[in-house]
Length: 586
Image 1: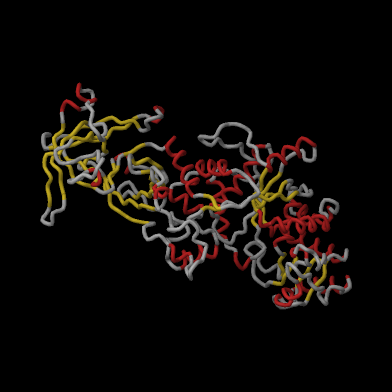
Image 2: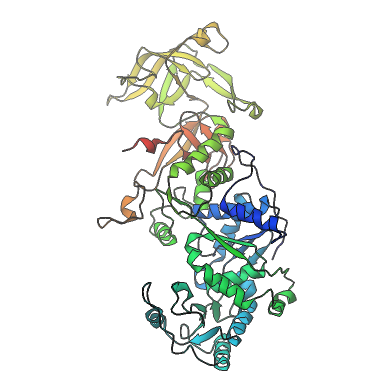
């Protein structure tokens, strides 16, 4: 258990510093103004059974962001009540992801911290006549539950006496019964129109070791029960969750009200004995829409299948929607926070265009990513009128709109690399770059004319012999001579060979989750989602630190790979293109 003050809200580039307006913040403002709450308490409660994905970014920004905006506190709490699916690897990754997004927690908690309180609360429910031990199997429970149009039937064990229920529950706790043979169920209403209220299970027998409590517990609480009481124990004022929990809100409130931790502080004694700071209160659950983007799948089952079947290169593959993956792709915390602000908060689920996410990254990186020159598909240019050993340095700004980023020197020599697509022997209509006998401006260096096209035995263009106009050099009288195009370049003598990974969308259709005509999401995998080329980068790019982002001029935004990049063997991942090329696809 760790406690620390909540951080101040971090400024997101491109966002105006004005109070944000949405229905959740309005509720918070009204609760503070009315005196209902003196301080705001929120929590982010992931289950450590997988890696966080981009959908969680919205929840993280809301939970931590709202607490910070209103001077409150936000806990990170692991909902670790299902040990069979949980792993310390996920715990570590989740903490890393939250901090990477720019947030820190007031207190680090686990639902397993509260197992004794959950158990005492369950005994209280039994003594009140609000819970009973049921011997129905899982299949029988489903048969008794009824349907959306038909009420359920009471379990034949529903009227057991309080004494019998207490005895059986304590024996469940002692490990006397087999897995799945009995459950503790809430006694609510089997005729309720809300199926979640039809005597739901609140404890099950599961003899699985727990990462925090070992073999101490052969029974574990169900999510709805543990989650609601965890919020109450921590004094959470506003329990923010996604819309699929809307139907479960009555059960959330039922658990909080019936156990009534605030009115029965003796139930909290096990935590007080262990030194936990407690502020038991009645929380309010508020639901908001999930964050869903097209061209992605978010299902943990499908993402696991992609990893296990080798269709991607692990959980941090830059094509994956995990926070580990998009971080490696080059997405920045500020870009994700900007995206969350732009999407806003609503009660309406929708499938958002992934262009919103990509646009936020472009805007973020355009404002602050240094510029570098890189050639991804190289074609040799020889400036025949320069001496064999010619070498000089040209001064370039690191960012055209931000003088504070300073300048850098780029070497310039007789032999250069340019992009192959910047030359056309037979140019298409409107082509404004280099052609035989034509002129083009080399960015920051001068104007060249193509005099000769050199081909290999197969007729492929392998070299262009050109003339550099000396009067067009920087500072010369002819430097402003008008030509139709400007292209980038790197010095062949000084450029560093780099592995360039060209990432694109993982799926070819907007909604790969829709199964039509016998096809599944696997059938829509984009074969062009990852291409690897060897290109050349200017020396100042090669020396980048891992995770440093750049705009490779005219090519897009790239990041030095956080795992594989080295100064002597650079590796860059394309984060996003300069423009949305998918918008023009049919």
